[in-house]
Each structure stands twice: as C-alpha cells, then as structure tokens.
Length: 231
Ligand SMILES: [Mg+2]
Image (cartoon, rainbow, N blue to C red; front, side, top):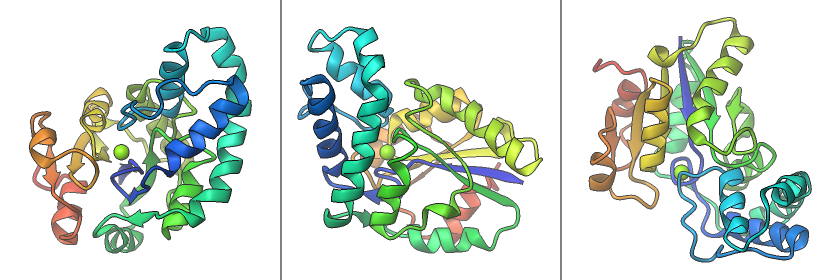
C-alpha cells in the first residue's frame, strides 16, 4: 500500500485570491487587523503560521492570536462557503484524470496534506469541482503551524484508518512549492513536485524533488512517480 498526500493550492486547484479574501475578512472581524496580508507570500505555509506571522507583524501578542483562532477559523469557513463557489476556482491540468486513475488503485490511500484549515479544505475542492470525500484523511493547517510536522500526523491517521502501517518509505507527498519538498524530506517521504502553482520548474528543481513535473497531464508518468516506481 502507498499513502499519497496532496497539497491543494497550486497542486490540485488554482484559487486566485479567494483564500486571501476569506482570511482578511476573518482577521479584520476577530482582531481588527489583517497585518501585511496583501504582500505576504502564503505559498507552502500553513494557515496557522500565516495568521501568526501577519498579526505578529502588527504587534498582536501570541496569547491574543491563539485565543482568537477558533472564531477566525469559524469565520473563514463561513465566508469560504459563501464566496468560493462564485470565485474562479480552477482544477490544475491533468488532476481530474489523475484522481480518476487513482480511484481504481486498490494499492493507494489518497489523502491531503495542506496548509488550509480542515473546515476550509473541502470547500475549496468542491468549488473547483473536485469531490472532497475521495481524500480519505488529511493533515491540515489547523493541526500545526509547522508544515513539517504534518507528514507524521497524516501517516498516523492513515495507519489508524486502514490498519496498514505508513512510514516515509511508503508515502509520497505532492506539492507545488519548495516547502512541500522540504515537508516530504521531514517525513522521509518521496517528494513529487509540480510547477502548476506559482513556482517555476527550475526553482523547484533547486530543491531536488524525487520527481518533477510541469503539470500532471501525462497520467501514466505521474502514476509511476506517485508510486515511486523509478525507485
Ligand atoms: Mg500549494
């Protein structure tokens, strides 16, 4: 069995600035501040880390930030459910075909490893036309601020769910940023990078992923990479 953990933004879908709008709305409501949200580079970071960075930059204390998180998450979810369906959410090239191919693989457990909070992730996927239920488990930006802590959590959840033991050696982490590659390394997992997000292939290549794709349009090559058949 192999555990496949997909990032969302830039990997499965392109969500324009909808995620940023939703976070700005929630932070303004809860903390009265959004910090430097318009210029902050969110790619590869967890929502929890992004919120901490934005609010720390305007001198809000860690204790105040922590206390407001449940309400901020609630508002992000409420606003996301409202605006994602009307924003342009596009599936990245080849992703639908790849997900269909994975449905018929009894040797794959497909999950999410994303910086999005747990309640927002399925809203984004559904708005882009991807069925969230096909991802059987996830590790999310609401679980930990540090993305590199998420692989262990996802492997543990997948092991509990299926009864199979997942460790780095039978896990693949798929993402569009250098942070996803580092995250795979942190979990001793195979790193599959795709340049369908904001990072060019040559930038991703500098971080030495095990496999690198411009896009996921060549389904059979991508499947070989996901199952690490090149070894
Ligand atoms: Mg991403």
